[in-house]
Length: 178
Image (cartoon, rainbow, N blue to C red):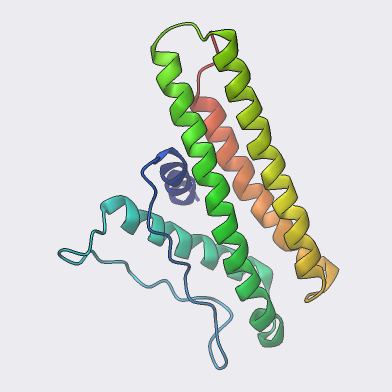
């Protein structure tokens, strides 16, 4: 779990952007639990250590979700494409949050924040929160059309727990505005 949090934070704080290829969804004849394929850097491919770590974390998170969802094969066939799509959209929100954190860190290093900067950063942080909630609503509705309500609720709980751990760690490390 600590590795998942570390990688998510790496993805958030990296404002350069990371290559984000979703792990393959289980297909017919495959297990519900996705296999974690080790990521390797190829010479000249442009893959960084951060990219490799992020890929590993995504695979670990997917395995954590698979282990806790207890999906049938039929449910898995419907769930994993939606999961992958959700994660891709969530990555966009994570990158936006990472840019906001980086902007705050830069401003914080310069001394007390001017009111205009504080307002801008607050507005952006609230917009990120709103985007995350809207994304959850969208995917809860999509998942509800494909899976039993209890499985949708379970998945949303898993995502919420992971995000809560991440947000706790971010809150612990980001200093208050001065």
